[in-house]
Amino acid sequence: MAARWGWGLLFVAVSLGFLQESSTYEVKDDHDKICILANFSVLFTVEYNIKDKKESKTFPLPESAKVLKNSTCNKGNSSVLAIGFSTHSLEMTFERSKGFYSINNLTFRYNLSDALFFPNSTKGGIQEATAGTDVRAGLNTTYRCINKDRINMTNVVIFLSNVTLEAYLPNNTFSPKLTICCEDGGSTVAPVTTSTPTTSHAPTTPPHNPNVGTYNVTGSGGICLLASMGLQLNVTYLAKDKLQSDVLNLPTTASHSGSCDNNTIFLNLTSGNTRLSFRFAQNTSTEKYFLQGIVVSTRLPPGAARQDLSAFNNSLSALKASVGKSYKCRAEESIWVTSNASLNIFDVQIQAFKIEGGNFGAVEECQLDENNMLIPIIVGAALAGLVLIVLIAYLIGRKRSHAGYQTI
Ligand SMILES: *[C@@H]1O[C@H](CO)[C@@H](O)[C@H](O)[C@H]1NC(C)=O
Ligand SMILES: *[C@@H]1O[C@H](CO)[C@@H](O)[C@H](O)[C@H]1NC(C)=O
Ligand SMILES: *[C@@H]1O[C@H](CO)[C@@H](O)[C@H](O)[C@H]1NC(C)=O
Ligand SMILES: *[C@@H]1O[C@H](CO)[C@@H](O)[C@H](O)[C@H]1NC(C)=O
Ligand SMILES: *[C@@H]1O[C@H](CO)[C@@H](O)[C@H](O)[C@H]1NC(C)=O
Ligand SMILES: *[C@@H]1O[C@H](CO)[C@@H](O)[C@H](O)[C@H]1NC(C)=O
Ligand SMILES: *[C@@H]1O[C@H](CO)[C@@H](O)[C@H](O)[C@H]1NC(C)=O
Ligand SMILES: *[C@@H]1O[C@H](CO)[C@@H](O)[C@H](O)[C@H]1NC(C)=O
Ligand SMILES: *[C@@H]1O[C@H](CO)[C@@H](O)[C@H](O)[C@H]1NC(C)=O
Ligand SMILES: *[C@@H]1O[C@H](CO)[C@@H](O)[C@H](O)[C@H]1NC(C)=O
Ligand SMILES: *[C@@H]1O[C@H](CO)[C@@H](O)[C@H](O)[C@H]1NC(C)=O
Ligand SMILES: *[C@@H]1O[C@H](CO)[C@@H](O)[C@H](O)[C@H]1NC(C)=O
Image (cartoon, rainbow, N blue to C red; front, top):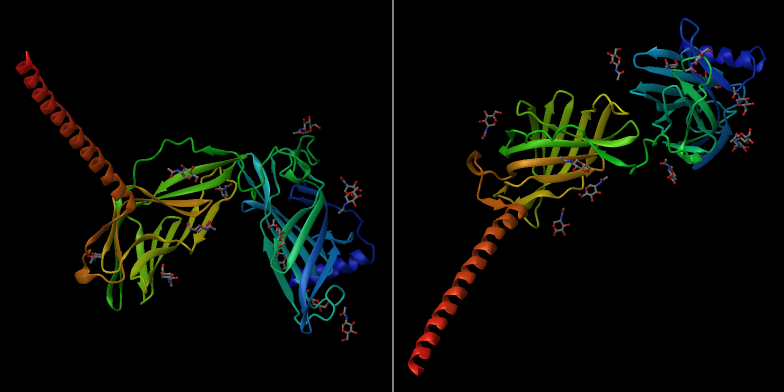
């Protein structure tokens, strides 16, 4: 609250012209060393409700906007540039990770009670909109982006343009070396939001297959999920300027919990910073159950641009089998969650919903195993056919040669 009053006072000071006018913002640490230096234009578009309709208001960041006292240098693992104007504020959170700095978070706090900006708003008070950004540059380089960078938030769109900025700068001034953004045709650094930059595989040696863990979920109607499987999470993330993939085996010591009702079963597995949640559903008309959803969250390796990854997909149709029977697959199966995460499942046997006597029911083999079974059968049949042909040829040959001797 005190800080908000502070902004109000700052605004008064600014409007009275006590503070110098400039669109270059700087944040200094206790030793007067600059940790963020930035110069940019911002255009805000805010949607808000006025009597029975939506109003859209677009305005620039005014020249009078000022760096707020609650900007920080290297507090925790980040530095913050907070800029205030009127009773609104824009906050950029910078983070540093191996060789790069980035604006991980952009937060806009706006006051709908401010009739100057939002006339006739039905709602009042401070609103908060937040989003990640693709602003990213190598350490000791100046980030430059002249073209507009559009950042979508709930009810708010922010356009950044004419951006020159640097965080964690070594010399209190912009570094001469530039990182040019993609919008300007730069390619030094791949922006985080681009979905398919060059892919490089993890340099790590492929780990051994995961150990098979057994899990069960019991509800009021008794046991509703029985599973034995080895789980391996495959995450794809941005590190340096490349996409990298890493796999992580879920240890069998992962703790599990879950719940079930008539239509849905949840199985949650947790190990350290990694959480996996499975959602099973059944189709009563086809009498099949299947894995419908997966939620993944995990901590990424130190080199990653972001610390954490979370992904979910609720429109899966995996591990499908008839109710009352168990699904079994010896072959490795890969379940795609999102472009950032997939789950490799090894040696799975699983059964959901109806489970007689707490034991797996009759087995339904997965397609992969059936195909694998088919190959030896085809090879065997082909071999048998070949033997038969050779035998027949031999018999015919013998008969012919007999006939030959007779004619001589
Ligand atoms: C800045 O102050 C506002 C208002 O008190 C607060 O909500 C916000 O979290 C502060 N930001 C930082 C980085 O401390
Ligand atoms: C910041 O931007 C303004 C307006 O574009 C420009 O006049 C000023 O020279 C810039 N300052 C720096 C330090 O780049
Ligand atoms: C974050 O900060 C802690 C100490 O505050 C440090 O141990 C850790 O290495 C930092 N992490 C990163 C990714 O910089
Ligand atoms: C929001 O704006 C109204 C009207 O300008 C003002 O009275 C109020 O103090 C502002 N709220 C905050 C938290 O700054
Ligand atoms: C706000 O409401 C008043 C009275 O209903 C109306 O005269 C005025 O035009 C409205 N202003 C805007 C920006 O909608
Ligand atoms: C923001 O939203 C607009 C309109 O919905 C869309 O065209 C654009 O691709 C979005 N941009 C990003 C970066 O998501
Ligand atoms: C960016 O800077 C150029 C040159 O100073 C200016 O003409 C242009 O209007 C600026 N763009 C925005 C969106 O402020
Ligand atoms: C920092 O400034 C010093 C002296 O002005 C210069 O010698 C040095 O190269 C600068 N370092 C960088 C990274 O710009
Ligand atoms: C992990 O996922 C990536 C990207 O989808 C893929 O190229 C790679 O082969 C996968 N690795 C494993 C071991 O599944
Ligand atoms: C059940 O399966 C049938 C046939 O595949 C499909 O048409 C129907 O949409 C499914 N129902 C649900 C609730 O998934
Ligand atoms: C979710 O999984 C389905 C089925 O594999 C796939 O078609 C869809 O693209 C996935 N959704 C996302 C966001 O990746
Ligand atoms: C379910 O798991 C618990 C321990 O996790 C185990 O003691 C119990 O035997 C299991 N039940 C079945 C039916 O496998």
